[in-house]
Length: 279
Ligand code: PAF
Image 1 (spheres, rainbow, N blue to C red):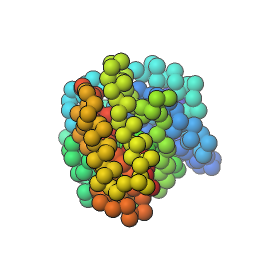
Image 2 (cartoon, rainbow, N blue to C red):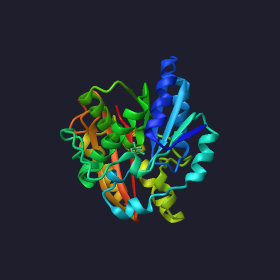
Image 3 (cartoon, rainbow, N blue to C red):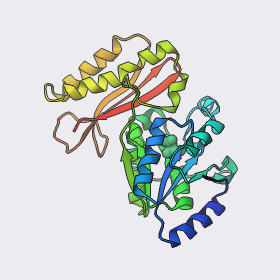
């Protein structure tokens, strides 16, 4: 695996590879890699000739400076994991490489970056689109791979790709779960043993909603899930919504072509998100 720390060198290198007909698969990450990331790498390797992964803890998408400061950065471990996985190139820039001072970014995403996660973390998805656009400009991937776990992020990036007419195909890869159902996340390492057990209520509520989908209407599905979560100790539910799978607007009927249930909750100081596609 080759490691690049500057965009210019990586861009030159990849341009030469592309000129020889190689296709590029890209997985942007913030590190603290787990099996969810590794499955994205495997997906990329099955579809493209060259797999590029980036690790960059992007400051502009953090709404809480403490969260940014405390975000896990186990870089040596991450490099070892990537060396054992189908990854050809790691892009490992620092903040000065990716941002100039006083840089601003604003893309009109309509309501998509103001609802659900965007409502709780205003500006978060502007930061995500800003860094993903910069990374796409450097890597110029044919395909970029993202996890379903941040479903809204995938929709936001798809919208940016449409608006800016970027020449990249986005692939959403299924959520990878622990054997007990907890969605894999870089933040799971913050959970104590008790909190780890408490966190299971998230995936269980989603699985229950999917299994009850044909039996109840939308408002009953929502109240069943919310009640099941609220009787548990240690969980602060931020939202549980059943939304149109494309616009992410909450629905009151099952009519839209696709439906997704999304959840966010705090377990002590750790914030977790999860979702399940219902239709
Ligand atoms: O999903 C993530 O890890 C980040 O939001 C991303 C896409 C790498 C942008 O920083």
